[in-house]
Length: 308
Image (cartoon, rainbow, N blue to C red; front, side):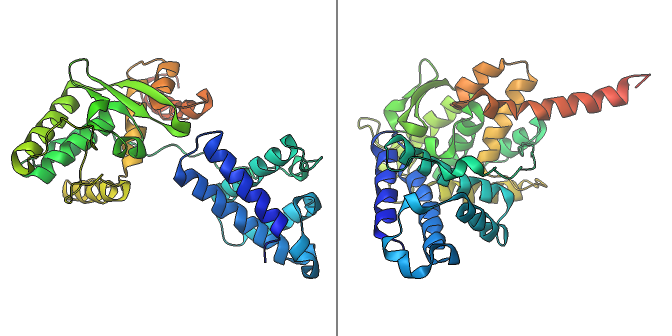
């Protein structure tokens, strides 16, 4: 059983993420899930002496309990998942210290497990062109698919940002898109002519077949019931298209974002420009894409240099 005081503090923290930091409902839900899992473990484990669970408060949590929780996570989770869950707990306790609920942060004595650095999955230029060129536009759904994936590759925006787009967010003349990113941060990103034309073709066909025009600021990409298309639906569509065109690696919408970033950097784009386009807060998040380019550079060097 989660103690009332601990549960109330978690609830306050989640509310603060939404109201003060502008975190999305999905992000708040993820934090909530991880923190309630943590609270359940702490209150039900041997550390909390179950008889005191009803009154167990955050001030009673110590580093030994945190390490016990880490041991529990190691039994069934990957390192990246453990790091994410521990990050949620860290943020929660920093919030408690900041607001004077507790004096000392028990996480100060706990190290985050080291993670294996992975290179983001991306498609070579030939493969992304093959995927896009394979999309048939003889139906409304096909026209929509081409518009969606041309836009994702052209802009590098997140799939959640794409599904959140409305008609008025696209400036067809200036080839710009207004995007609402994480933390409700708005940014303007350029979009290529091919993507703009694909969006235009889709909206024209939508008007012809369903009578839906562009007078109202409605969702840009619609499902069969004329509602906002979901991220899950787009992932399924992309998976089907990638298999049909014979790609050997699984392709997710996020892989198109990785592909955009990798190709931009390979072509000589400035790292900070790519950071701005992707909507990354930290430059270090964008820098992981440079590993792809460096690895390819070293491979080329090893093959070409006479005295390697």
